[in-house]
Length: 492
Image: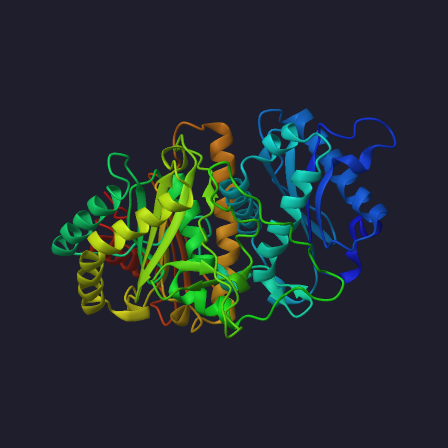
């Protein structure tokens, strides 16, 4: 185990490979589409890929209809994700005795799913890139720049710091919604109508965010999730501030060559490196632009990337506008934009002339009613609510979660691991029906850690300074469910 994938304590390894490639002896290297760290010796890369391919093949003998998800060995965890048919992503993490490095495999697989979804939103499916250029230079180039930029968010010094047990009350791959009143909902509806008409007779789609919370969307759930995730990473006011103050991660020995900016068929420049932090800032007109924020003279260029969506049939141009705490993501069908840059300029003018007052009014109303970063704090509870079908979650504010003891967090993390396994088993035995679970555990420090899954919806909770009886824990769930979940987790 150590000889094959040891990594010598150098941190996690992430690889993307295609099982349809490199089938002939001596051509094994052709399978590898991306490998992190990039300076990992080729022989070690081949060892890792070879072991992973062997595990996948072996697992298929016993379970041909289910993908291998996790393999645990003495020194490593291998987390698998079949992103596309025969295109696999594997994250190899080294086990050590440091409790701070305790992770949950479901959370690690969430990273693989997230980066693949974001990649396909900007570049299309990996298989399409390979079919377009069988040598794989195009696919490898895009994967190298995109994945390296994505992984820069996890940099801690020279190593990558993956999510640990301290993140057990977070759920990657979900949207956080802002709760709004009926009055504000009418204001939002009025704004989305104006945004939809920015191109005349052709309907534009939109997302509206307040701070880091989703206010409205006209896209289907999967597409909403991908665009929301990108906005939180790079586009909201908080993200742009982080972009401006972040150090470049391009360090000696790990530099990535950014290819030249390509142009799409209608003359509008597409964006080669959408996750590169240093390039984006809010322009004087309120629209997000690309350029250097540090130079006195900003070499600003129009920043209108083209996106591929899973559920929408057309490719879309993304145009981003900000006013104070509101971020508008406007999506313009590429096939309807005849005049390229001129067409984009027309859409921007339409937004400024027709939607500005709606945006100012909405921002004022939302700001007045906003409870700040602790708006969704519930006294006495540290919780995570997840609705996987709608891809929505809500959780205790991070600042409140940090008040939990290490024992509570470790216990809850272990409980979530168990629930992940149970859900996986239930899905294999009956994929058509959700199985309900409820587990209450008294942790070493006398806290209650709770997991309840009802009709597909999930509730995770830690209660410190709580009563000693199981009745106390059950009553606490009941109160929370009735007050904040419309009774979804209450006992019938």
